[in-house]
Length: 231
Image (tube, rainbow, N blue to C red; front, top):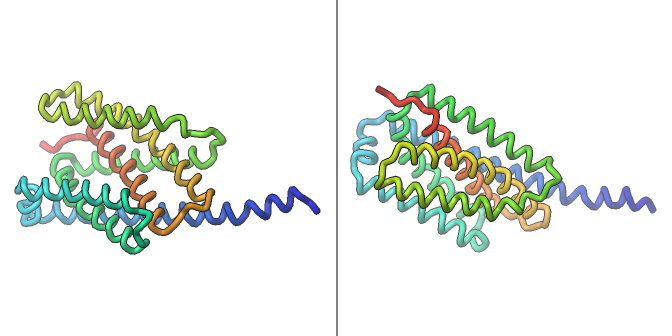
């Protein structure tokens, strides 16, 4: 018996499972991003919706809290949720995020938003490809990226009160580094989960949320760094 051939045949189903899982992850992520962009544009184009969402602090912060609640609920209960329930939660989160991000279209020029989106997409695709083809185990990045993420969050909260332009610049630069690294780290981690046979419909949605957050936060950091504000 040719053991090399047998090994290749044995690996083929695992590779197919991984490919199906990652395809589902990217499909969900793409749908979520499209929904976010559509809702953001729709809200920004409607004076009535802007007054309700952006003009009312209670509504705006209520939406923010709703987003945090959905992320926590989906992440904490992913192993108990059906694919349909997880998908519904993810789509609701994407829509709420679009509503709150609509304010960006009022602050930054359309060309700035488009440019930041293009750079984000290119960076995301590059890091996802790197995570797919590299033989290096990226798990060692985890602790550094987590510490960087915590630092960015804490610094961001502090700067809400300080309103320092220099600190905002540093936070944005750090965010670009952190979320660029997280894109590769999370992609490889999801592929490892799928290769081990742990992929499921709900887990694919959770993975899509993970990569969606990496994409959105990288986009926001780049927009803060290079975006041109409206007059």
